[in-house]
Image 1 (tube, each protein chain N blue to C red):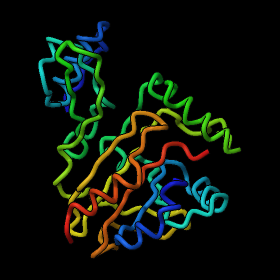
Image 2 (image 1 turned 90 degrees about the horizontal axis):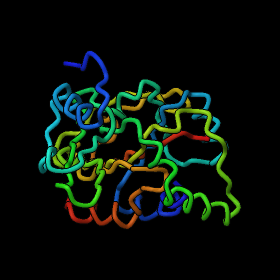
Image 3 (image 1 turned 180 degrees about the vertical axis):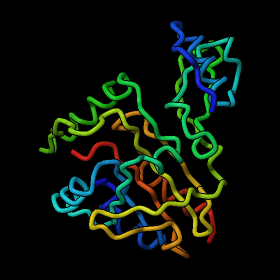
Length: 105
Length: 132
């Protein structure tokens, strides 16, 4: 993935750099309003944040990744708290609710 | 999490299996499960690959310490539950992802701060809207 060689000083340039380097698609007109990114532009192809523009109206910052809805779930194989390996395919015929915790304590 | 645990029966009836994911280590996860009596599996994703796969990255500080956060912590304090000083990365975003039995994402939400989580009603409404 392309990355900016140096961190631009102005927010707009940083935003453009981020868009260029991560290939994030935008809604609205970034040049016409304040554009804010959600998260970091890493892991393109797995989890790609969608950047939205507010079109110069009220400030808006949305972590809008609704494009993920309707897509296949990301496979995983992770140990649980007791060391048992859990995988996505371990739960056939079940709905899964993944609850991503912030810090625990 | 408390609200989710209280809705355990509703989730079970809807055949929804919650999996809680943390980026902290296994020791912390085990301690958390022991202390809180968490009834669902807690998966340990120290490399945060699954977090990133669902677009959960690092939040802005103003989102973490906005009015909504203070209000949420205040509400918890009134119930006698006081937050502890975080030992792990407090800026890591959390969220909820609902996946149907065909392993297709049906709902996806990234919390903009500690107080931003979908209600159980919303999750069950999404579940009910998709027939399986």
